[in-house]
Length: 316
Image (tube, rainbow, N blue to C red; front, top):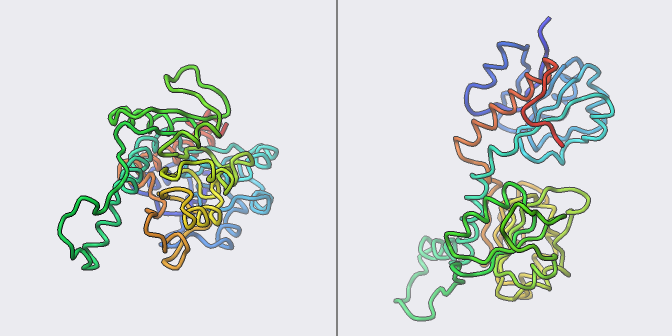
């Protein structure tokens, strides 16, 4: 009898078809995320499930899935999964790190440049027909990136990829992490020092109890008034209401965000009302190459674990 697996979203590339060669696949075909009831109904007799970061894999779901052997998530983050409870039930949990590192680092640096040089603001000015003054020395002045200080919170794969890009801009790179990484050639500082000295603060940490609302009003108050915050990690690392307050009060110069506490957000969101904020809709890994590679890894993880072999990337 073949393994039965539930896949909660169509994935780029032909990897779901590869999965069908070795398992019976129950695939949600809709454009919107799979309804909770649909997942709960189908996971009852499933051996494996392939989910995305919008699918909550909690105790209720895990208890419903009596035969479940593996949870494969199409993401590097896994805060949407109760990993400890899954492990207590003997279930393997896998994810897709490394494959999205460079694409996410590209986006982070793009956000940094966009907010520093007011690129989105300038684009909007033209599109709305408001570029009605000739060139002048004080028009649309931004912040120079070259030679600035970049502070990276979290020196994992993505943090290191961002730091490599910063070398091309001759930036001073400092970082804060849970521990000093002897293998990297960047200056390790405490968080307060990083906030105080950085022109750009980039967040590249996982979401966990230690990093939840790590950046709040108190932390933002320690940044330079000329500094910018860039977040493409997880939305809840930043206390959003505090960020809005800090921006309105001019505590920092601006922010660029790819992630939010609750997604999606609309045009009426307080952050969307501020001109010194660049917003993108959670597209850190959104290149064709990366998303197809993520699908490959997620499917391979699932197949290997179902076969009792070591997956490519098990959640640590």
